[in-house]
Length: 249
View 1 (cartoon, rainbow, N blue to C red):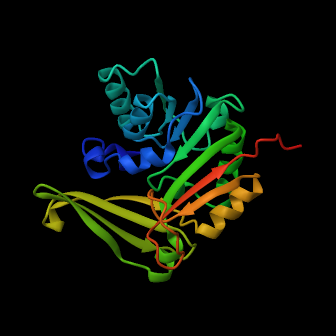
View 2 (view 1 turned 180 degrees about the vertical axis):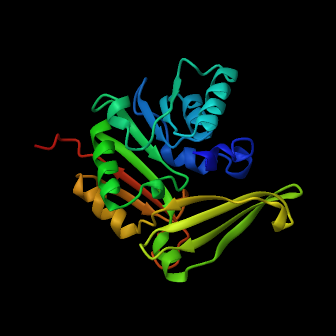
């Protein structure tokens, strides 16, 4: 995960924890309820949830991101309420007993790092297994239905002082997308690029895969403020799902 390790020192400045995200998630349903944060990066949301009385397990494959998350947990005195482990989105069955989590969180456009629809189906199976009856799965991704229709060459630059974080796309014939990013001085020629392959799951594909594992939609939104989602116009998708309270037979 060299791509993300290269961002460890600036990740939280580029993508700070949004108070609206925490408000959307809300408080734990009971004392000691567990939140599973998949692709937790340097731990920003995991730490915020732990500070908000959740018990948290954060999984992250990038070694330097994980080290930073652990360092911050110790610095904040949260080590009794939070644990970070090096693992991916499809490793949940090896890290957590069935029915252990009240919340599974996969945000920050993490889900498109799966390679295809078969892995997406497996992801929802893993999430359903991890959650207790009535547990929530919260997903946040870019709206790839709009992106695939518009095919933008790049995303807006993010600026930190005299440096810039640039992002661009290349669209593959197999339906996946190459995502390139660079960070450094404003002169593009001075910034080496990192690259990662993404799979652009559309809202329809996500809803269908979730339904295949029995998830019930609580809401489909364009933002953490619960704005109405428009597949043709919204830039972001927030999908709030729930496992049935009665056990499936």
